[in-house]
Image (cartoon, rainbow, N blue to C red):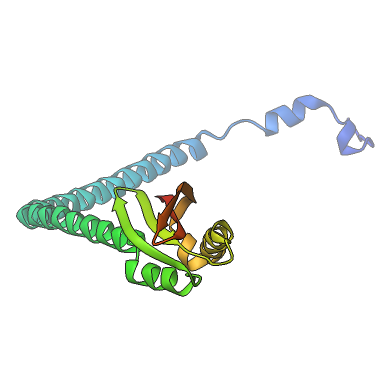
Length: 190
């Protein structure tokens, strides 16, 4: 008898599909050697890369050891160079910190009011002591001293190296019938 099945293929019995989907052993037997051959090729490739890198490493190591004496000499020269650069930077710092006393003395004489003269100038370590005398017929000795001190403080070129500059001791003295004030300016250098 002839059977006609009018059902669409999605609704057909599953047993036929399972029979059709049986694993083809021939395809698997061909695929296994292909996978193994691919793995062997990759292994050989990686082995060749490893050998070539090993040879390059040996070559570079040989060159590195050949330059060992030069590297030691270079290290010695670098140390000497560093010592010289430190010395030169120290000298440069000292030159920057050096005070131009010729300029300072010139500014002292420029800012000096009439009637004041210097008796002594001492610089010991960072202490600055200027001793002087002042005479004024108008009895304005302290005004002259204060004017001189303020002129020095206002001058940035003179005062830039000082931390402190102030009036120290003041003593009155009579010389030849005239009153003279002896004073000292005390300062601290930076």
